[in-house]
Amino acid sequence: GWITSDVHILPRLPSTSLYTNSVTPFDRKKLFTPATARLVFTAARLVGSKGIADVLAAIARLSSIYLWIAGDGADRGVLEERAYELGIKPRVRFLGWQD
Image (tube, rainbow, N blue to C red):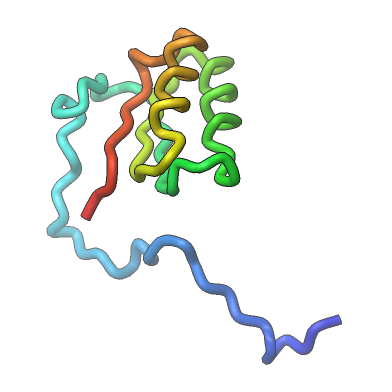
């Protein structure tokens, strides 16, 4: 029921069209991630309301997926412990805040 001209979408991340072909891919070896591994990336504050524990549970069901989490917050230690309990800590990278 909203008027189309009154609706605006603000993306959480910048559009990839802002980047040029001159950007070099990140070297996965720096984060001990195989070059051929399927990768899930999320950026969030590490607090309960962001659902990162749910992402960890999903990754636990997908044996070949690596997870990179950019961000930090009060629940980081709890989430790292949860990744350990789920047996996925070797495939999860907590990257902290990133520029």
